[in-house]
Image (tube, one colour):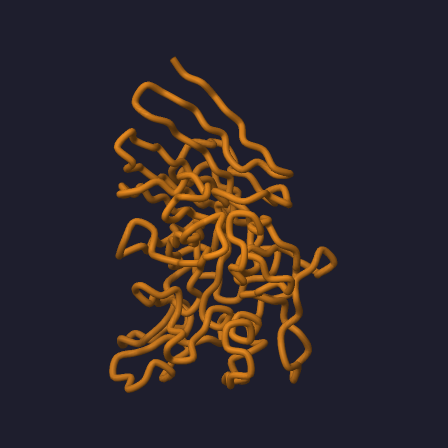
Length: 318
């Protein structure tokens, strides 16, 4: 016997189906420009389940990507509904300024296109030692550091927003779960990591935020030539678990986190300990909200076939 339940806010939080063996829920992906934000507005309202958790309830959008501003500008432009989607993406200092108010940041890394952000190389002596990789077509016959073939090294706002995806959580009666995530039309031949962004002591005055690698380390996946990636993860808990008071923790959203510097940082989204914050080297591109009240509709939906996995012949990209 199956029982289907549809949970609705303004947007669709999940479609859940109960079975004798447990339950599974399907969560649509939401394009993001930062932490719980798209076009400068919050994707979800977490004021009930995460009161006092600033990163989920900030009145000011915590951005991790912007639109390229005029040369010499102090920061990139905030992306809004009126932004020209053909504008190149650019790095932003918003995340750093929120978490390190008054701190110093290397301003030469702000408001630059993503292809200007380098990566560490063999023989580097500090995390800030970086080299900007050349393009595949321009690589020398001798070994050198260059981007893989087909990488979109300087995407536009519109190309960032092409991403689509869905997450399915199969909950077992023993509390464990199987999580399946598919993203398509993302940036091709690029590194993404998956994160569980959530709440400790939810729905209480002592609620606190957390961010951990989804399913443990490694939590990375690489998109193919068509910008598709799929991952199945066996987990000790369920990201779809309750956010009611009395729970030790719950998930706010699962993040597909894009690393445009082509490297990952283990148990941290970026090298924040070395002044390498998100917004300069990486950022949330798609989130899968699992709690809270949704305030927006998904910008994209998974194209056919809507089942999990990568099917190149169905891709719009040629």
